[in-house]
Image 1 (cartoon, rainbow, N blue to C red):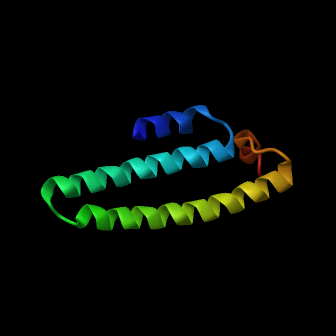
Image 2 (image 1 turned 45 degrees about the horizontal axis):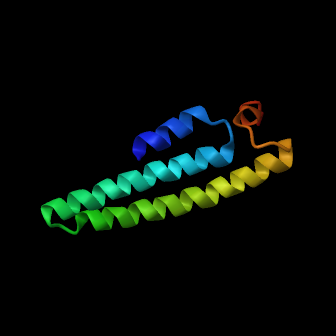
Length: 87
């Protein structure tokens, strides 16, 4: 699952697909934490998954603001347009 997100991150040029790929990678890391916690009989994996969920929520809010601003300014969601930004 992590590899699928990484491939999507490297291949796609659209900001929305890039953010979705990052979400897939975060969910894969959270799944690994939960599986490891279940394997060793500890609740640490579930606690780490809550931190991953909080980080994903923050990433979504910042990413959505970035998408809206990028589209408003360039009328495109291409990441190459963002690389031409000056400021």
